[in-house]
Image 1 (tube, rainbow, N blue to C red):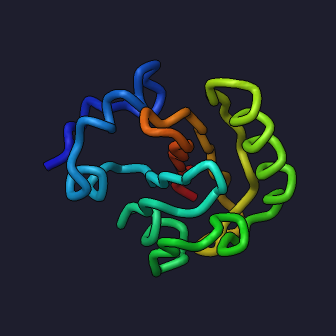
Image 2 (image 1 turned 30 degrees about the horizontal axis):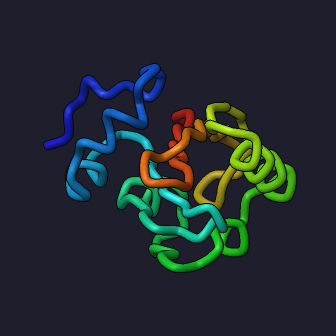
Image 3 (image 1 turned 60 degrees about the vertical axis):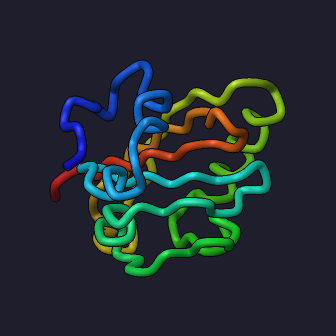
Length: 126
């Protein structure tokens, strides 16, 4: 069972989730995705697959090529710029996703210890 105390807003979120097993990451109430520096998916949680409506795991694929979200071009540019400039630590909200185009998706992007970046996706409950 995942540690429910790992809050989406925790200031040390990336460090805390890096201590969890893949099974524990899959049990978190928000989506978790790990991208390498080229934005290729290294990990895609079961929660993200289910909640996004994507249903499958785009392992080994470019996250933004596999994504159907609006604003993905701007998101990619912001993410790659942040990776180039130093530690990644930002949040943004995007409208809708495949499962429900009316709900908002809140995304936190944080540097991963081994390089690349963690993406955490929290959806409103519309």
